[in-house]
Image 1: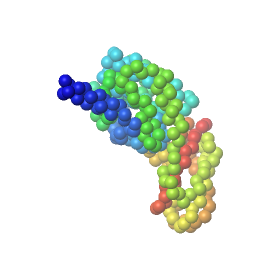
Image 2: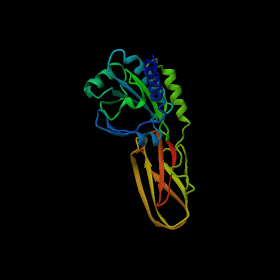
Image 3: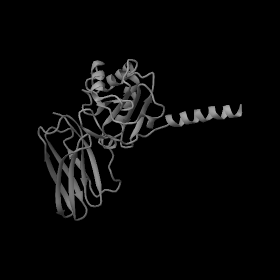
Image 4: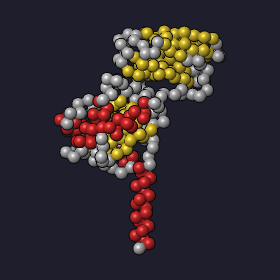
Length: 259
């Protein structure tokens, strides 16, 4: 009896521990069209990611569709902010089959993956499907559900992450960084203060973590500076990150493009 009781308690402890996962596990994976995704870079850039692991199978469809519909509900109000990743459970289904299954179940805008780097076992008990919601620079797991998935619940998890703003990348900054206008359409004005002689790198970073523009101001002295960044039609509507770096400090600020 004691041995059986110990076994039961052990199982309950392991299950409880596995569901206590509160932060995401990083991955770098290729989607089904060959684009590379690094999870932490995307979360750090302000992207909220909903991942659905599927077999795929008939019973997998309704919960996955519920999560997909939650993501789609933000397409107009928060463009380029919330993304839906449809992932084969153990990467043993071809991208062609997964893509066909997703499209046949009206998940046309899902980013599809069949890559073992995206592992659902990092988030507790495996499920068919398994839905998680990730966001914020703390890489928060806001939702982790194997069954009973509803659009409303996923939306609530997403909403909880909108308040997780992109913080400065360093608490010690040599800048008083500001940008205007914000939102911006085609020309961004950047103001900053440099307290010591340095080289300054200014970067525009997209929600996928990729550097869109990069400029370097070499060997400038201390003082107040204003720089203008023109991007015209280069940037689509959405949220972006402007990052300033010197040899010692890094600071970032979020801005929105609306045209």
